[in-house]
Amino acid sequence: MRDSGADGAADPEQGLAARRALPSLSFGTLVFWGALAISLVFVLGFVVGPLTRLVPFLVFLPAIVAGVGTIWQTATISVWIFLVEVAAFTYQGGLSGVDVYPLVLTASFGGLSIAVCWYRIRHGEEAHQRRSREEEVRRLRSTVAEVQRRILRVLPARVGGIVVDGRYRPVEEDRMVGGDVYEVVNSPHGVRVLIADVQGKGLTAVGTAFSVLGAFRSAAYRKSDLNELVEIMEDAVIQYNSYARQVEEPERFVTALILDVDERARVRFVNCGHVPPYLAGHGRTGPVTQAEPDPPLGLGGLVPGPRTVEEFDLPSGAALLLCTDGVTEARDGNGAFYPLAERLNRWQDVPPGRIIETLAEDLRGFTGDRYRDDVTALTLYRATGTAPAVETGRPVG
Image (cartoon, rainbow, N blue to C red; front, side):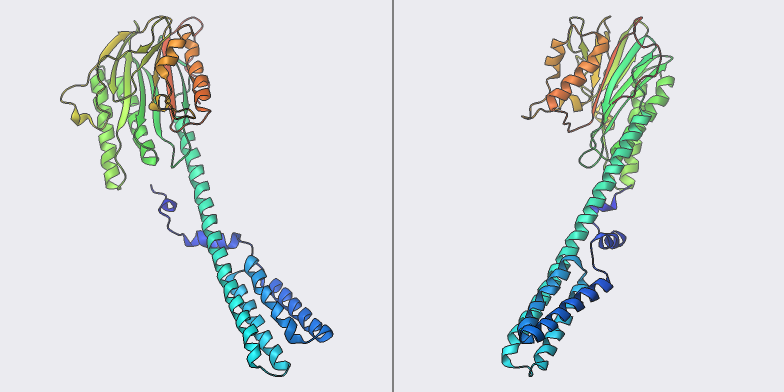
């Protein structure tokens, strides 16, 4: 799906709407004010002095009409004034060489008024069309962002013996929202967690994100092997890119973390070019990954064999933080990146249930609440007696 307004092509209906939206004189109003001005000049001419001395002052009338009327109205009043001036000079004793100068001035001023009116209307239409396109894009961005919020799981949620909390904030600036998605599935093979970020922005990025999300939701229940699950998601991206080529849209790749947490809180994960997971609290912070990330989804052909599966135990009292690069690449007013690892070192005494709120508040203060990309962050920690007991809660945002 393409936005015709983005190509800058003029829509005739938009142009007509723009012209209707511009202020203009009605035909009756034009006749009334034109006749009134000319009548006043003629009356003053007969009362206070020669008519030919006052008629040239009518040249200002087209300028007034040019500021509020249409092109044909300005042209009409300009021709009208010129003919009245010719008639006045003829009535006062015939045209002479001296009368040529005011006639030339009148004609020139009338032509200039028409040009000014044309410039005003054209740029007024362009400004109106620009505002219309911006409003349309703004509504579309908001709609897509709301659809994303509706499709993604409501958090916090208790899934199996794991509590998942998070924040998701789409950026509705520039061209379009981005393609951050996440999901948590309580499968027969353990708690499966996905966090992914599609390269680029726009509807194709959102479409790619939803294809990955759908593949994960379907395969997470069926596939016990984590690499098989990743391969199905890889195929989903490749198929969507094949469709994108057919409709001449850009192809996308997707960075993703796919995790599996068993009943003993043993975490297995595959990192497809994504921001690594971090441990927070319990006296241990920092990234848990040891191997280099594998290529993103959609670029799996660059991997000669199966993707790397890493494992670790999720300590009791600690939280596992997953995030997109909207967090790690957030900037302050001076352009400095958000120091996530440094911040986590300061929060070793923060309870697992408070990590996500602490991160959100700190990130807001660091950026001044100005974000350049979608921001998505999740925390996973072992459930306790005080943890949420249901799988629904407040909306993420």
